[in-house]
Amino acid sequence: MARPGLTLTDPTTGQTITFLQTAAQTDGALLQMESTHLAGKGGTPPSHKHPAQDEHFEVLDGELQVKLGRRKLVLRKGDVLDVPAGTPHAMHGGATVRWEVRPALETEAFLAEVCNPHAAAASRLAAAYRHRAEFRLTGPAGVLLALFGRFAAKRA
Image (cartoon, rainbow, N blue to C red; front, side, top):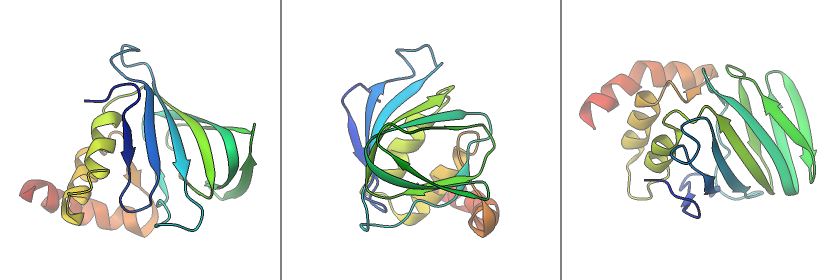
């Protein structure tokens, strides 16, 4: 269960996520987090979209490289970015950002599952498939998730 101050670390990318406001606190309207992306460490988060959620990012420190649809952006301290629902995006770099997701849906549960350091790759794949209302990979990875995620979810 998410609570303010709880920090998760993505074992694949090294990204840390600290909950500031949870879905329970905002009646599901908002999930607010602070996230640190590590430059040159770990993997790069894949291109993805959120079918029914808008995201807002504010760079608190550092620099963040963003691919938003077909556009490439560089965000620095003080810059903000709004990502409408359904827009493919990916980001990486050495930055700390305030990150808001509206509505929260089951994003907390999704993040807890994919950031579980003891989970096998198949379990993370199954989590992504189960939480496709919150998160969908785009491009070739999205096709593979659609094909194999269902099977991983049944086995998990």
